[in-house]
Image (cartoon, rainbow, N blue to C red; front, side, top):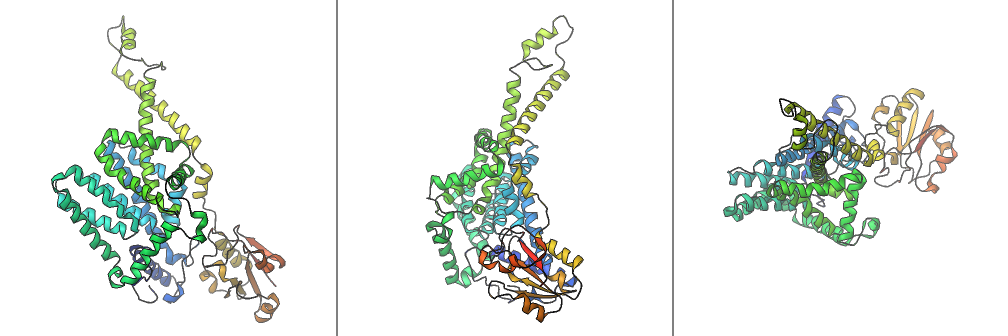
Length: 499
């Protein structure tokens, strides 16, 4: 889009709002790269492929934007929990639980995809509806809710289910005008969607083809994604629910179930507005044959919401239970307090009762903390926070320290390596190793002082250069596929050799 000036995405498998947001962020990053003398032509940007993004300066504003959206989403859902329970601690507990989910960390900022953008607007809508739950400005509420719905649908089509919490909100708070407000919300949502995806009207065939492909893709499945197919219904639902346990451990799902019931006990109306979207979303995604876990990112957000409230309920239960059994320094009830005060001029002091409740609360907190800590998948969490250098970045530093300036570097195009830092002092030649036979002897004759960066491909037949040449240094752990996204796991395995 930045290279051609054509604002028609032409591909509508996903709506266009994330495309325009990424283009704007890339434009900012490109300007920064030019000011740092890294680029001078828009055509040098290349393709940004997960998880290693060439031209890091160009991509950085987009990554910063995604990270910001993920943090604001955590704040919003924490405030929603506070408004429902009136307990300030939940504003910190809900984001804390999300921060231990490797799934949320990966798909919210590391993997630049549409999901976190849609999640942000979805949670923003719930945040707004709960904040306006007692408001009287019904028309303004309907307009704002419709705009947020439109922005969410402009990010992912299946977020149209956000109309459900809006309808429930109108039925609960503005019953006499619920139909009018619902139609107004739908109208504003449609207009907002068209503003974010204008070529849905300007290029109707491409838009319908894209939407039709996605509907058929998920409903029918495709052979190349056979590993991502399950029978629609309970099997799919259990698969998605199981991913919560993978990310949050075995204990938090139990507290999440408790949290759902406790939320309805505290305020069933607000609970219905908050939880209607994740429940309907799970039901819809479970009705499809094809599954990709990244699609259920919003479920992880609302899972943390429910689990935090479940922990609150468990804490209160433990405090109550400690009041029924002997506890060091505390009476079990009024009768024990009266027994203690016999022969004294005063009853059990209020300060002592306060210390007693505090000690019971602290003991309950310790028990729950130990339980949750024992159940968390610490290996996955540590990996999510692992800041180990990426092999391509390590190789660039090694080259700058060990290879003389003016040397020629023949780099496999399949490594998708950011070579900007090398262009100043080296002659860089990028070659598609899988498309042509690389002869080290010929390269030695063609270039002065040549070095080869040879990847380790998944297919062993393509690894003759990797296996037979003497390696000056080895990098990375993951074999290279050689396709469009040749290093899907990052940290590719390759060697630097000198023929």
